Image 1 (cartoon, one colour):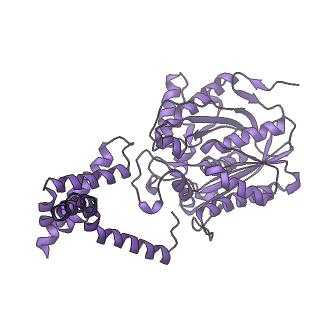
Image 2 (cartoon, rainbow over the protein chains, first blue to last red):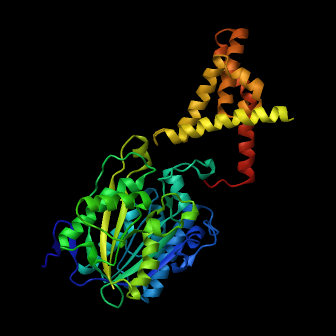
Image 3 (cartoon, each protein chain N blue to C red):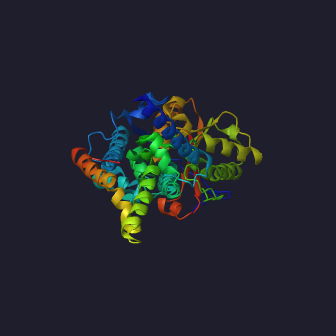
Length: 335
Length: 120
């Protein structure tokens, strides 16, 4: 058997899995953002006719997965695994969406890095010969995340300037053994790093070291430099975290020019009052499924590094005074 | 009317400025819940020292509506009840004095939750 690992943390796929299709569903605020036109579907409001935001989130994930499946032109029984994750306790959005989808289901939790994690694991399943086609999807919802992590929205607490706004949306894509489309060529699974940031309103700062570490290891493992990529895009560090990650890379001798951007920075305008930018599983998922996939398909981007970032704390751990551990997972997608 | 509104506006506004400064100048670990508790206990202490009463007289709702006014009411009620009934009054007097506010909060909270479906 061929050992596909290269360097410390990276795997290089022998037969790179193809991204057959991608689909994104977002809420109205994201629809009004600068990437509004790139999403497959924009909901009129964040409840979308459901009785709770939680149900709305799960239905969004379902819609995104159905959309990606339809566009791939595969039949449901040709999908070997469904990989999904979200931010809610016991990943209920994904569990409930999987109940409807009826596919063999692997639930994932990587906080906001879940899309990159799902694409890495899905690609490993396919290139390892365990699956032909894998459906990957994630979701997040501003109001369910506020309930889960912070205070009731009716309380109207002031938000810190370093805080990020959880994206309401869901993104999904189909990975396949063969077909046409951009390919996932390598993946670098990250380590959990914790530099002791206890401020849950600065998750970008908490995640930045882990993302920078993953990018550095990725470059070392594959003997590449940032210049080998048309776009290096972090999951959702936001403005604060992006600045910090750039600084860490610079001090480690890796210069990133303008090709290093962040999904959390890209998804909203500065006028949308989101403070440091977007976050949530859906943030990197919908930016990737929309804008980045379109530019890969049109060959505007030839090689992209998507570095999903996750803050791996819970509301309980934060109340007990624990710091916020961060993680970053990177995948390479080539047109 | 203006001789009531202007002092209320100024004093109420200054209390809010103190709250905003507490939010902005403290560490992030100091949450809105900490501000709430600080204001209630602060009002109770200022009331016990006899400093909050004159402020309520001067500014009316500007001093009684903010959370510190609730703390003031607790300490004022407790002290008055001690004068009337002895030491046990310290336990009963505060809530008695604040009973109108507490009952109103329960009643209107209940009515609003029947009329609307809270989702947050």
